[in-house]
Image 1 (cartoon, one colour):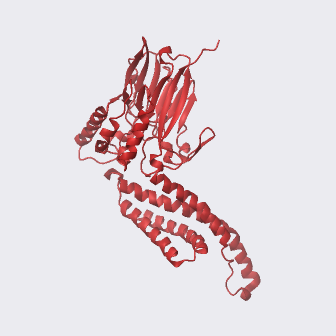
Image 2 (cartoon, one colour):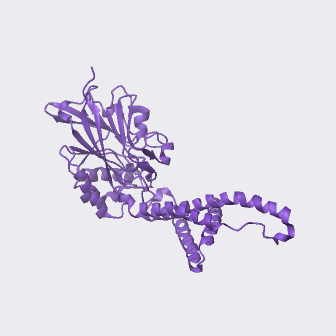
Image 3 (spheres, one colour):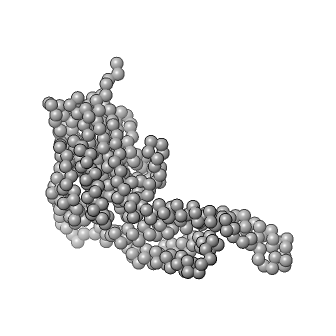
Length: 411
């Protein structure tokens, strides 16, 4: 209860400043009433869905939208708070000075009036995140981007020069609310005509049932050398309550069966060889391994038991912290690792080839795109779906296409 009181008091303080900017510019009483009506409805909806909320009960689309609308309301008002508070940094000293120098001549009104120009500027600035968040919730979450990379390796078998991999990750089928958009995304994946499709985990949010409405959709995925997948932290059913251990175990069995129906060859600490003209590369897939409190079921040694040290290896591991903590230091040398998990936080600023930023960089060193360490590469996919916040702002859903090239050895 105390945290809810704190939340409402804090929001009230923010709104005190935000409304001052709004009423300085807007003189229409109906618009002022609409301001408060929207505020009360959004906060009320958020409290309704989250008061007494237990994560183990399951996170629904309604929870996501309640959170999303709160963010859409809160961030612009925080912008107004910063600007209006900045103005008060000057207004308060002026009021104190007038109190002691003007006395009764000021007639008790010591504060200078809010400047309309500054309020207009504040509202204009606040409109940017408001529009961005609304766009992100309405269209951004299905604004699929195909990102293409060419990676060169001296020890790539010649038969695989030009080999194309399409990676998708973090489908989170329980979050989808528009099957036509998802169908479009699947068609876009197939249109890349890659040799193999690799999925790097989190096909659901909580339970296998979330995937059932989309089995037919994802069954359309096709690649010459097949579809391969691994599990992510959300796929184990760890984030909701189950009536029994048997029910949770059955959920994981169902999830594996649904992936098989789609056509995925699910690698559970295992490997598969792809051969061409007497040469081969190996796909290695580990179960989820994540730093911190995440499940550490991934076993790199077990997954590679049938792999030769000199094989060209493509590793699928859901969480990029696994690559940082264990993979790049392994003497087996995993040429390319494919991960996801971070979603790029679904929020950030990207100018391709120039600038990339998201708050998630403070949690993960490798959080989006291609990185190289110790002559090994990792691609951290930004995710095909979305989770919690029902949208994406600046960090769009991603389909990655990686072309492997044979590099010429330097003499």
